[in-house]
Length: 416
Image (cartoon, rainbow, N blue to C red; front, side):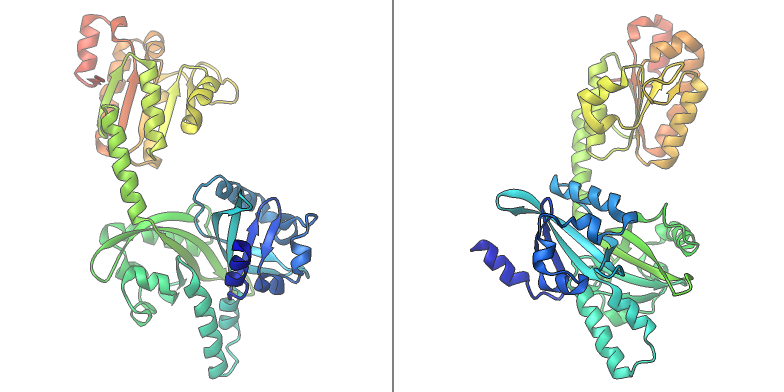
């Protein structure tokens, strides 16, 4: 009965919808019509959905997104293409969510056909009345999406906006379309960064800025954090004519994450902008794993066996550099204070409020001497204050002389 009710609900929606679980378990009427296969063909055990309807260049990413969704991970809406039976491609905005089919994990995919939007822009020779009907149809499709969708021209002016974007911003469509996006809807402190992104996207550089987050200003003056996913729009000659962005309002989620991070800092006796030392390797590694689990960007420079760390603490140690004279098991290695300093600087440059765990400090002191190590800590301490980052040093203070211990503790705090 539940399956029948589900089919009755979604069968005639003006969007493509499918349920995936080791193959399609269900596809609605619109999806069959748009792609050119029958329901029986698409739900047959021999039908390979990813191989059949996803272009080869996108199959690896689609498989990854499906697996993430099956395991309950959040996958933001993304732009993709579907192959029809005759080999043509349809641009779509894909939204996936975990689903239960016959008491087993599955994926429900909602696919918004974006080709109508392109057709509207291309078929300008149509009558005004026909064009208006097509625009209304495309707008209805966009308005079903529970994500903000905005199209921009090369000058950063808004050309198209859907219902969700208006809802987030608090404006009517007529108050948004035609406006300079950055000057009107972006807080002043972020405008230069957004202009840099806009310039990069105009040149076709989508790799660096395909996904990013930034706050937007609503009509009431409130700031909302939006997670954007971007695609370049091109004409028939391949020239860039604009940008299509889909955005998810993550303000509440970010607020919860921030509270959890603050709690993780407090529970571990740490704080951003500080430098700490501890003689307990286990405590250092657990604190590192805990904070990175809560979204703090982390780099570990370790003297330990890297595979043991990954096995014991999981993916927290994906950013791992060995403190060794040679690489081991494919992990990059550094051994001089200069190389350690450079690795830390590069990580701090690319990550805000980062965490650096420096393990095996006895090795660095034995190899370079205490005085160079002490000067290195002195210099780096101000980088961590400036970047509001955190340095956690694993070092047995009892291996130092009383003078060395006093000097070091004048620059760092002992983790209590």
